[in-house]
Image (tube, rainbow, N blue to C red):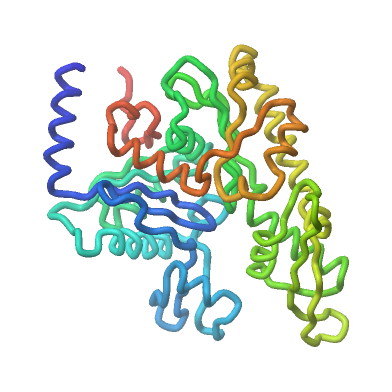
Length: 359
């Protein structure tokens, strides 16, 4: 370790006595927050309810999600992060301020927290600046940004610094991040907008087209979690859903089976497989060989859909393994990075204002 690195390490340790270290997985569906020394303290939906008359935030997270589809005209429940990207800067700042404040409740220190935020791969410099500015306006002293496939790989303790290929597919709410990592960096990556939210809209469309009934996205998500399978199981699964009959306009109940859900999301699953294939096809053969030996790791909430690892294994010809606790892989990665920023500094994204111009 050189003199400058040693100096930086001591500085970080001293400042750590006066500020909190916080890791954030800023997801489309859920935001998870880790606080150093206390673990994952928040796992709440990325939803904010806003009073349009006053502009005031009424509720954030779990409380706001309960309002979805049930609000009066002047209260709007919104997802400020759409497809992994900040779509409403002010609301995102409010949400981050609420979450950071809640995470530090009773443990506030003299200086603002040092924050590491996980974002989708392929994020633009404008989008990156929006994340940075939102975290800073929420009170962060220092903001570091890491791509989610890298954070997930670190979180599931893959040997990211070694000269060996590691492949992670992070199926989130708004996007799926496909990344191949070697020597502490992303060798190849792709971000596709086929993930949990797309599966939900597929289910809404299928029920509308096949059964002439309209259901909400919240109902579709609950149905997906309850009975979604990519391959048929030994026993059929079914659930009762409630919505509005499009012919009579009256309330109606419907029995939906796992086969109906497979029919609904099948096309999106095939598109996801094609995206993974395209990443493998454009990767160096030595790294593909490593991936064949080590397998592909699944992270994110989509990894919990029944039968998805077996289906991907059959379609790709490579073993597909669900990571331990896939929902928290990214935020666990931010926690590891916070504990040793110097070791993972090359894995962090640099904004344009951080790049030193060459003479």
